[in-house]
Image: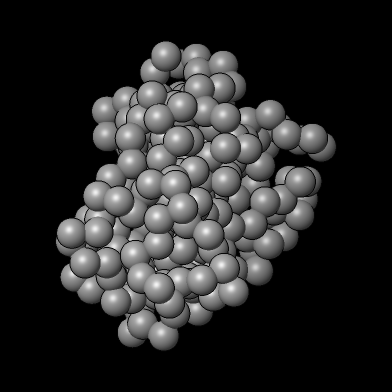
Length: 193
C-alpha cells in the first residue's frame, strides 16, 4: 500500500480525487484558481472523515473562523512556509519511509498536528530501523548507515540532510528516533514569525 502525496493544480481535480477515495488528509490552500479554498472546503462533504487543514496566506482571525465554520479541522498561516521546500521535505521523508519500510508488516505513517504555534510532521516506517549509534549521523550530508545503500539501491545520503536544512530554514528542527521497529522522523515548524 504505502503513502502518497498528490498535488491538484485545479480545485475541480482535487475534489474529484477526494470523492474517489483513498486519501487520508487534505491540505487546502485558500488562494486557488477557479474557486477559492473556502468554496472548495464548502464542497467537501460534511460527513467525510478526511481531515482538512487549510492554509491561509493572510493568517487573519476571520479567515480561521470562516475555514473552521466551513468544516476545516484547522487553519494555518501558509505564508510562513516555503511550499516548494516543505513539499521537498515531505517527498523525501515519504520516499525514505517507503524505501526502507518496504516489505514491513505495516505501511509507513504520516501524521500532521498542531501543537500551540508549531506544525508537527511525523513520518514513521516499520522497517528494520537504524542502530542507535548511527541516528546522530543520519541527517549529515552523504551519510548512509550501511554499505548496502548504494546509489543504485536508492540515494546518495542527501535526503534527510536536505530535510534538516528545510526545517532549520523555517526556524524549526528535525529529530530522528528509533521507532522499534523502524525509524521515526519528527519535524517541527513554527507557525509564527
